[in-house]
Image 1: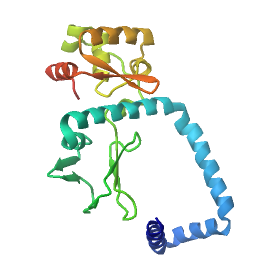
Image 2 (image 1 turned 180 degrees about the horizontal axis):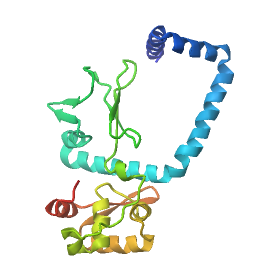
Image 3 (image 1 turned 60 degrees about the horizontal axis):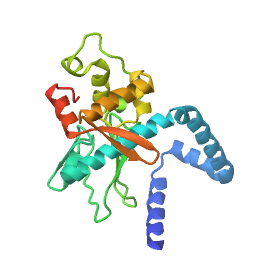
Image 4 (image 1 turned 90 degrees about the vertical axis):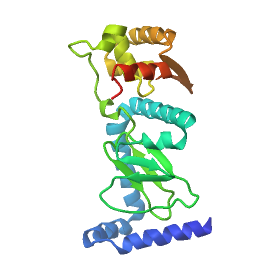
Length: 238
């Protein structure tokens, strides 16, 4: 443990040695009053969280938990390859090597440390990486469907083949379950009453197209194999 701390201190010192003049000035301001600077930083971050994160945290949390369920299903059914190849369009996995399309070139060997995958609603459309020697390799990616997280969906003015087969409401619910979601999140996303969403989910579950999955106090609905196949048939998987 002591060796790890010493290694981290050495890395951080090397970062300070590479600071440009403007960064050095900011660091000197901090070092004049470390306790006061830390308090101001904490107060600022707390204020930012209250204004920018807290109002949306429930939908963010549900979206991230839904992605975790989906990734777990991919790992269980298809192994590591299925898990990593679907992370991002710029990510490729083959032969035990995960490749990312980035603007710089670097080779990182986990050396038994493993890799941390972090679904992050603020990473999209990029893939962020943390590869400092003293940290476990970490990859932050945008979970599927995150582009629609901040908006509500409305049915298209002209019906699709899937809507003709299932009805507009049930088709909309089914398409939203590409990422597992709760009834509350579906209602918000589709601008529908929770009761209406529950009725659609009941019919879809009876048809074998969706499956419930409990995570703590929440119940997420995800596509069954039949549901995924149906969306592929009607080309509604994007």
